[in-house]
Amino acid sequence: AKSRLVGPVAEILEQLKHADPGQINAQRSVEDKEREEDERKLSIGIVGYGAFGQFLSRKFRQLGHNVRCVDRSDKSKEAERANAEYFPPYDIINFLDGLDVVVISVALVDFEEVVTNLLPAEGLAGKLVVEVCPLS
Image (cartoon, rainbow, N blue to C red; front, side):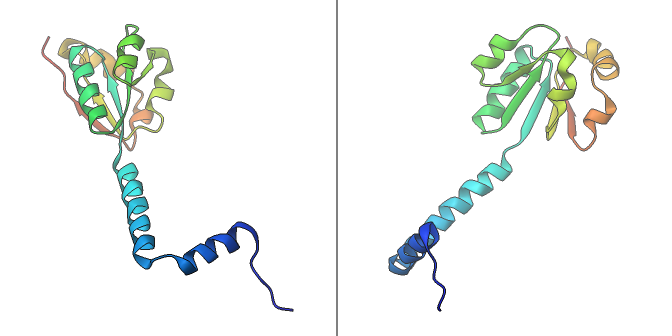
């Protein structure tokens, strides 16, 4: 007895037999392009969600990146307006989990305290850390 394909696999194979090769390649290239775009998206965390942190958040979102933020004040409403995800300081481990980039955007006078007391070194391992501290 000869084996045969059945169900959805057989249906797709039949469609492929009758499809224009150009359509198959065009569809594949669209899917490849979407996958490549997803691979280029970064998960960016912003520490300090004041005016400059919010500005960076909007720019990163416009470029299609995923943005999280953490601030000592509740900035959940500001984050929601910018389509970013807000984390309170006590949830810093979850904030850091899965990030590609950490942007530290706190006043320069607060930088040492934030780095020493808020950001655990093990949570920063393997991430690009960028400091953009304004002077005030």
